[in-house]
Amino acid sequence: MTNFADRLSEKIDEFQNPTVMGLDPLMEYVPLPILRKFGLDKSTDPSLKSQDRFFSLAAEAILEFNKSLIDAVKDIIPAVKPQIAYYELLGADGIKTYRETIEYAKNNGMIVIADAKRNDIGSTAAMYSAAYLGRTNTNNGSDMPAFDADALTINAYTGTDGVKPFIEDCEKYGKGIFILVRTSNPSARDFQDLILDNGQFFYEAVAEKVSLWGSGLIGENGFSSVGAVVGATWPDQAEKLRIMMPNTFILVPGYGAQGGTGETAAQCFDENGKGAIVNASRSLMLAYRKAGISEDDFQQAAYEEALRMRDDLNKHIFA
Amino acid sequence: MTNFADRLSEKIDEFQNPTVMGLDPLMEYVPLPILRKFGLDKSTDPSLKSQDRFFSLAAEAILEFNKSLIDAVKDIIPAVKPQIAYYELLGADGIKTYRETIEYAKNNGMIVIADAKRNDIGSTAAMYSAAYLGRTNTNNGSDMPAFDADALTINAYTGTDGVKPFIEDCEKYGKGIFILVRTSNPSARDFQDLILDNGQFFYEAVAEKVSLWGSGLIGENGFSSVGAVVGATWPDQAEKLRIMMPNTFILVPGYGAQGGTGETAAQCFDENGKGAIVNASRSLMLAYRKAGISEDDFQQAAYEEALRMRDDLNKHIFA
View 1: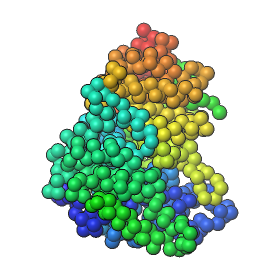
View 2: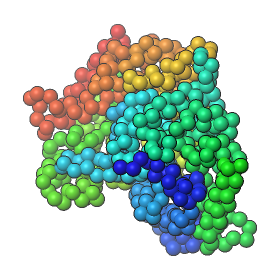
View 3: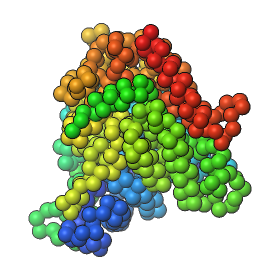
View 4: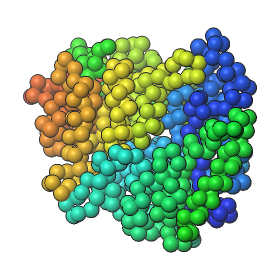
């Protein structure tokens, strides 16, 4: 089975584009032509006050939006990262859309990182891992994949035994994980910057464990399927982490709407311009919200923003 | 709107029982009479190899199991805590069962703690909070609750801005959160026991923040709706944390199957025997798996184990 980090590295090389498109859809992001198709443009329709009906239609509209965005960029962006909170907002209907988005992206050759930041003690972590990366045990001798993403974001607060089930499934099924090390938000400082008695920052202690946990899953391209999340908003920390975790693939959120730039994101790449992938969500999904662009042209707008971002990243990564 | 911690405290007082029943259902836990009802007892039925059909039937069987357990203990146990990983194993069908379990428990007077350990940066945390505690914005001027639990477990690695949206919804909707401070697993040590340059353990720094974050939501009973998770498996740490966080309601996992006892769990209660609730999952759900008990009697077995646990807890809390 091909190592996940190799699959991701090779797809990035093929497209010369280390971008992952975040799919974090809110109803207010869905362009008018899709709202119209599902009768969701008429806010006065009384049937839309029924929660069952609204959630079901909204989930269908969001699936259509996601599919359209995937169609628009699948030949230039290697991966998608649907953030599950946005789907949980629509209950079971949203989760159906989540699964179908994963399936559609994979069928279109994209790599899927399920962004769910899951975490728990070992016995429960094993269930999250089965759901997102592995397979669900039945009581009839077969097992079945629930979401079957290529990779999952996780939080390691519970320590080794809460992470191990994910690592085991990475190995068994050729999947990946990205562990929160340095998050992109301003309050990342609150806990992650606490200084330990050995002089390290707390996030550095997490980084050391991530590197250790990943040491058995390093692929031919030199990166491990046990990756890390490091925000594009923290270039100094990223520079240090890149050195501390030379074999760790880094998922980089925070580009665009959160203030990260090509220059700051570039700190997460190694000296060969490898080993990281940068997420953008709103800047791609809402690329159509610019003066002079019609909502009908949201796919073209996403495509053009994807090209702009690709060039911006490459310019700084290979500067 | 009644403060969540007050609602929980009063329900515990009414039943003289600080127990929350964990609902962490696997197919292998479902007793035979329920499997039979849904045709899931015949592992040779070829139609069960269809994932859609299996997930749908399995989710129905688990809902029935949950409802039966709720019926069995609703007059003696004040709250339930469904752990969402077990439902995510069945995709959208599982999430439908999750929502219906929450609804059924609430309709039967029980308080529901959604155990999901959600966490992310502020903008995404706000979506998780809306999904579990608040309401989903629509584009038609109304808003609708997706899960509408009474409380949610969260992880605070992202710091203040990742926690704030949950606290705001606690205030707005009379809900609660329980923040991971000291998890019940052996590897809790890995990060939570790192020593800071001021001599504190890392988990103590988290505890201080939890106490601070909760200071504005303290109810008439003296406890805050911003609670903490502290494992029954760590009595020494619990004793210290109880003093450090005098107004924090503590959710205590790890009793029973994980090795926590009435004696160790008692450390999470204050000198008046208040301010904590102890979770048991497998020991209640699988109480029927004892010599001499028929699977038909799983409700009676759960009821009797609930009484035993209640008495065990009270004996040690008020020792």
